[in-house]
Image (cartoon, rainbow, N blue to C red; front, side):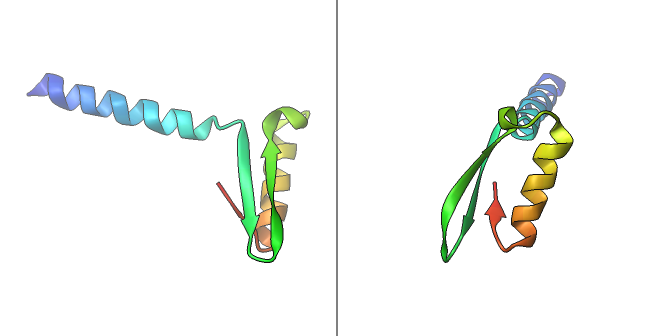
Length: 63
């Protein structure tokens, strides 16, 4: 039983870490073209995050 719980916890951990490391995000808005924003296009993670926040504040949904 403990091994099953441990396995489930490990799989959940891997799934969450993979989501957190997404290199590209697609931002969509109803009346605008979809935008793909990729981490490699920016010098720092902070710049990438700032662009995502800017798009989301403009009405886009990024994921």
